[in-house]
Image 1 (tube, one colour):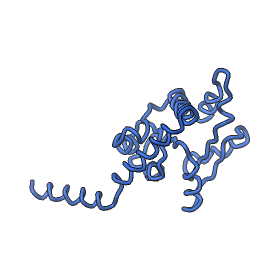
Image 2 (image 1 turned 45 degrees about the horizontal axis):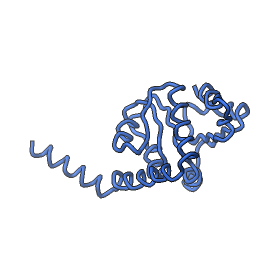
Image 3 (image 1 turned 90 degrees about the horizontal axis):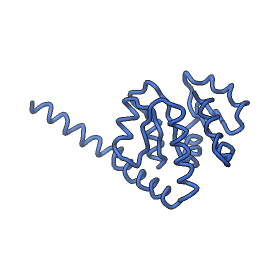
Length: 169
């Protein structure tokens, strides 16, 4: 799927978009076979597991997160990206869908389809290069919303209210 996606990204009329994009893959998991693709694509970096400071360095230079999980009930990586003010493209699975649906600026939920992902990646690419101000305004909105949504005090208040409702029933 990733190979098809990378090839599709480069197939734009009169443009070599693929040469201007860099894909960075963080984390170790079932998809670590992706290491073998590094030699086929000069714009693909597989970092595997990275420490907090290394992760922060990558997040601070990212413009978009792509999550293609097909079975994820909770996604700390999506929350990390949103807290870093980065929009997210994710597959239509419960965890990412629940998180991203909290705010329209957080990103997009897509069917597991390479063409859909490529189309959205190129939309973000075009927005970043065509209207940087609008792109960064969106990232600022992501920062503001994610700080409120993932604030520990709000979470504690929410859980407290939920428990009170359960006890009142």
